[in-house]
Image (tube, rainbow, N blue to C red; front, side, top):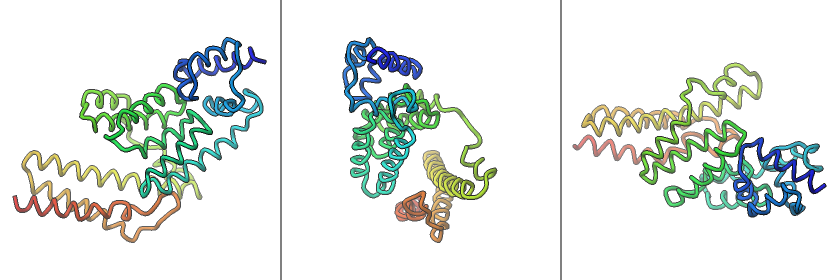
Length: 274
């Protein structure tokens, strides 16, 4: 049994394209331990078996009697509890996710959510380390691309422009999203959920782009154009004041961004006086 399990771990690790060191770090053991497992010299501790199966995303037939479906449900429950409070209490959201990682070490979904609650630039190096582990080890394209994005933001917070640009180069230019297509082509609740999520993303992006353009115009000394962008951003935020709250988010677009309105208006006043 030792040799068969060790061979299976080695096979799964090589299929995932990761080193013994990466697997060991995800499981909280030494790479020498992984090497001994794969050579059949020792067996993993029984408490690590579910974590190994979860890390590789294998079925119950591939690694003992492990129910992957139940694990996915538990992982999503952990992430959902963190989503509910990550904007109001990021420290508690981080604690919930770290507790989840003790049960499911190296889980891509939990790690991806953890990146959203670790503050930068204060802990940018930690964020970059997690991102690198994900881009090297995950089998999920959306997690990999999100890790490159967050890595770029972390390098930006450190003022490392070259490294930021290198990370951005791994993200392909696209002109449509899965959510957009789901909203346009699916039916029923799937269409409803996709439309709400895509609306939220698009609204956030439009507001962000207006603020960025205001920065660009101000840098060029074109204050009137900067003011126009800022006023439009305020109008868009305010236009969502009567929007419908849904379970997918903790609050509406307006509730999320209304605190920015006084800041933007103050900036407009400053630009007018210049």
